[in-house]
Length: 208
Image (tube, rainbow, N blue to C red; front, side, top):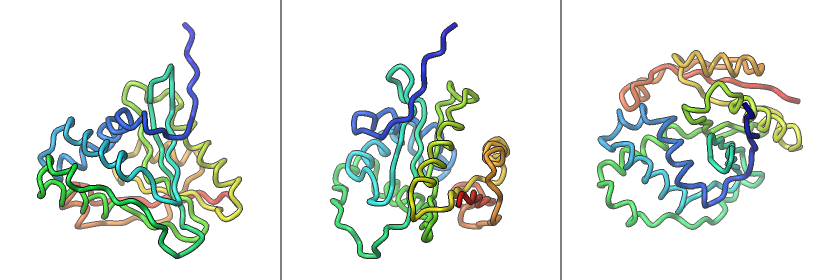
């Protein structure tokens, strides 16, 4: 049996629907606890967010492709070299009205609380998701190798970091295999109330 090649490529607008569904696979537990939105609504929410507000200036999203299908995605970000805010087109919130003001408010609060502001020299993995049907096939390893290479080739970056839920031992084990070390363990009452996740590990890999 021949296994088709998996490639890591930059995100394109045409992948938004597939990436949105992947984000639901990866984070449905957190956002189902936060809102009453079903999988289809969550997927559409993320798709509209990607359509209207694709990336921050100092960030990069990549996708893993196999036979034209998006089977995984990773997003990294770092601190902009300039503290001056770069102008970006803000999303038209009218296109989000279908989700209801209360759901929209809670989703935005949730995304804000999950956000991490990288320090100078830090490249932060904001999210990494592999489709359930393609896990344990080396996709996560490819993403981490790509992220490490990115940091090693950027003169202003020297650290790769991420957060992982404390009880997600499978993910934590993968990161430890790639030499990430737990730098800080956090207990968050807000995280417990909003996402039913109280323990978070902040993991770091020093590359230079």
